[in-house]
Length: 416
Image (cartoon, rainbow, N blue to C red; front, side):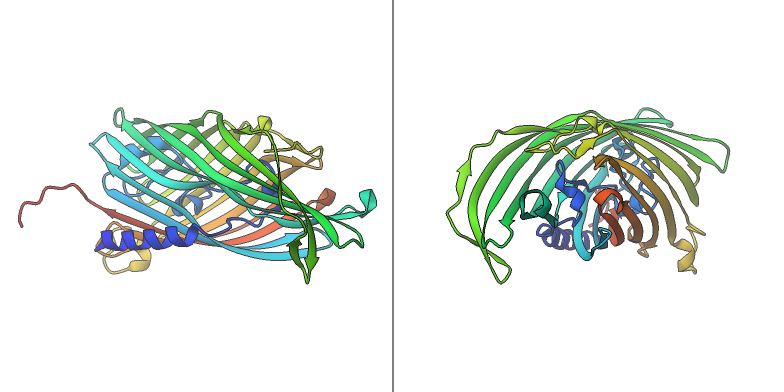
């Protein structure tokens, strides 16, 4: 029954999520968009720490943890996010509901586990207007959509009771569509430029874990994850046309003309994450420190004079507590209560201002009676950017739902 429910939910979430715009952020204007995936629901609810793992959850942030798999596990997730975009003199609101991930993991042997899945890499979804009247007496509009996803296959191997290693192979793919419109003041006719990019590439992710007992009641966990810099091939096309407007709608005033533009190669920066934590089956607290080498990023077509990139850093702290995981008559005591905090310098610098992102998280893992499966609810409140130096501050509130279905597959039936 659990397997049938997992299949139905997976199909529904994947079908629903495929048509969604994944972000309204104006900062997704740059590069390949805003970084999207920060972990599965249960990991995000602990601030996005990658150090924790067990036998019934898939930690896709570190492939070495796949070696802990004892059950076949499906995980799917979706999020509804509500945004307030504050530009100092203007305030806009937006909301998005997105499919977040689909992953599966299962044990091959007592020492070897594997995982496969579909995850978002980045998202583009901006709409904004820029007043250029003081410069060239024009007004411009910018629109963007799309993003990059990845399919991954990874395995983790347990060298002994303390050490595990793992490796992910990732295929990245997607498309980004952007449009810019420019109108002269008091002129009905303007111009439009449409850029389309089809992106693809491969990437790798290597992980290592060291876990040991400090005493009979306390365990120590540590992790290291390294992703080398990878390249995305961007096949680009550009079309230009004259346009006019009627009741706020854009109407072509001429046929599209295709302009030859060069294909480009874009960088996915290298990343190194270090994590450590202590706890046991009832509670855990840990932290991660992540470094990303974003200094070599470029935009798909143009390098803007007011934009640069620097090396990024992220600090994540979080954990969980289960009051009494083996309670028979108190359901509240079997709930997993999660919480965390993260602070990130994204590496994007606009108008000489570093764009930073910070958030607090809270989550609840609701066990499904009679199984190892659970329903996970989470909330996140965060802030990205600033209203200083002509920029936009994003205040966002997210509600996420994650489903974990775990069961023992590939077992020999003794009786029909």
